[in-house]
Length: 435
Ligand code: 4AD
Ligand code: MG
Image (cartoon, rainbow, N blue to C red; front, side):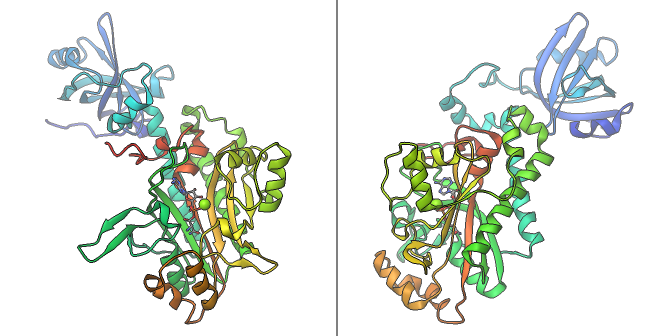
């Protein structure tokens, strides 16, 4: 194929008005009207309309239109015209059309499909405008996280996926045989390794996939999800609360500033997102339980919150709510006890508003060797694989704190999704490993 005109992307068509360019993409809409043919093309950056007028392009190119089907790939060459009435706002006065591949009958039609069907066709479903918009919001969230930490001198540390121990409880571990040498587990969190790195570099973060063999089938649970985690030496719980609040307001502001178009396509009401301003409300766990009981929720002091409690709590405030100092027994082994009340952990959960629930979990960490040894026993964890972690309390132990933010739950909230499964390109759920 001889390419004589510059290849452009649809997102940049405004820079080419009046010029002849070539676009490469897929047909999403085809229409005929008398001697005119219309092709709406998508190229991943946007959509634009190609107008084919008989006589204005070679006869065989005009005839090729008849072969086109939904999702066929092709190139269009033509002069760019701003046309507010056209989908995407630009039109191509087509002077050349080359077929690349004629698509078979496309399974996803412009009609209602069930979620099961769409999930089975996730590899194709990603092409739809709504899914593209969600993935662009996700990209912005991830970028915002990285920028946030780098602007604050946190160093990226890549923590391992194969680990010899649990971090977040043994019931949700994915187990695998490690080359016949014993068991290995897929990482539930990079935290323990991040603690080691924080003692080397001060402020660190990791960003990667984490795995939980969650038997729960809820709208908030994936078995593989992405988490950005931060850890900082000398940070107390108070420092940590401020950092989580800053991060979440930073992410929200970035998405509002850069992804307005996508949020509009998703029909996300942005008023509740604009209402996310610092300071966020703060409640102790004990206060939160009292609030829940006032609302008629039956629960005992001492239990962790379930989905219903989180939903109710997160509906009480316009901004994310910071719940701190949960009962130690309901939380992980590594959390520092509150010196004011050792029954409580110096920990935090942040619950996103509008019923979205927990997006962040974090804490100050046990700094003392003897206390940590006792904790391993109390939680029924073996000492040997944790020796390296205990070393952090043998050589210059300092107070330190960290947290993890779940990317999919954050994206689900920002996009207004009903379920986290749409917030990740290829979701892994209790009952889904395909495609
Ligand atoms: O509260 P979690 O379990 O905290 C930790 O893993 C800590 N080690 C993090 C740290 O302190 N470095 O998980 C953190 C966040 C949750 O708040 C939630 O947003 C997300 O990870 N998350 C999940 N997201 C989707 N599916 C699941 N099954 C999730 N489990 C946790
Ligand atoms: Mg948690």
